[in-house]
Image (cartoon, rainbow, N blue to C red; front, side, top):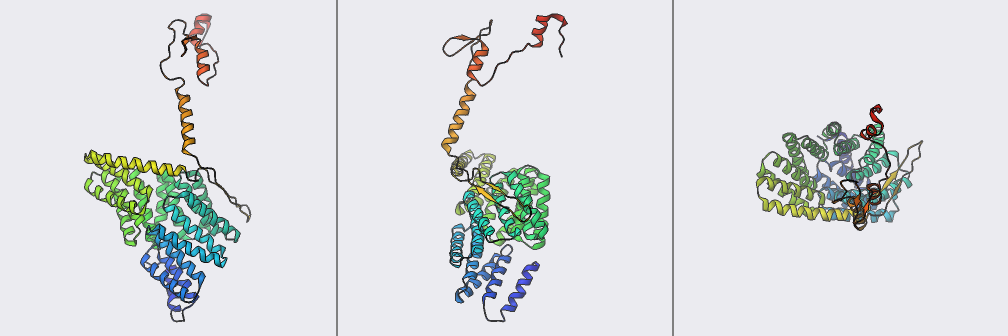
Length: 446
């Protein structure tokens, strides 16, 4: 069912079609395309292509740039990431020529989301930071800046830096609950639920997912509903309620397929395959996992490919097909190795964002720490292992005087040996048994 915003835009579009085509018509078409895109991507694309055509014929560069951005969003949602980035760059070039910093800030945000969907968190953070900086320079409102903080919080959540993510989300919640923007609040509640889920606070996660779902169902936001249903499926899977999890994943998958969101389809197939395996429905599990694996590889979605490979390994172990289980296990190890090596080279190690809201001023700074190289990590590991091994192995000790023989064959007091071979510091005391021996029966234990 169309929400109030869509109804109002459709009425405005009908009115403008009675007049000669102009910039106002392209603005409404672009707005309507964006309003449609979560529930009906086909209508969204029809609107944006019409807006682009009119903007090109009438030489309206700002409206044309907005059309390219909307096309980029639609391509991103379909998993056509290279196409999405191409549209964003066309839009960015026009906004640069116009000197429109606000437009450039919005495009940086769209590019960041595209990179985030591909798991390229370092590039996503760079573009979100650039978007935030340019919006501040343009004197953007508190609510507009809150969107930047929300997106940065989602990156921290992806990196499992959950306390930082939650801090950003709580800050944004105060602003968006006050403004009453239900569409944004649904996104926020969904993401807060995800953080609680990762923290294994499942009842809190369920509460926020339900808040998000209620709003999204009321707004008719099919993509949003599919996302929250998938989260509820994962939550019930964590609770070992696989039958309920299956129901949520099936509903999510149906919506993602209806709106043509291939990224969502791939992820949900992988999840559903895992649930079917747990339920012992192995043929259905195989069908889902193979479909998910095929799409993730086409779209180069590394995180979801790893999910499908993990579930494929478990599936074939359950089926007793150890040859295939071994094959997918090796593919999983290779994918994990490539994924983790790539992550170690990303600039994600210590990005910090500081912000405050006293009075009407707020400053935000993002610092990038140097990457953590694999060689450095290996050096630290070797040092740690060396420390662990210092007191390992057979230790010859005299049965009478308790001296210890070192590697050179010399006998030492055990206190000296421990001091030389560890960081421990020796101090002396008298145990209760020895106290009785030394001081007699008058000694009493405390």
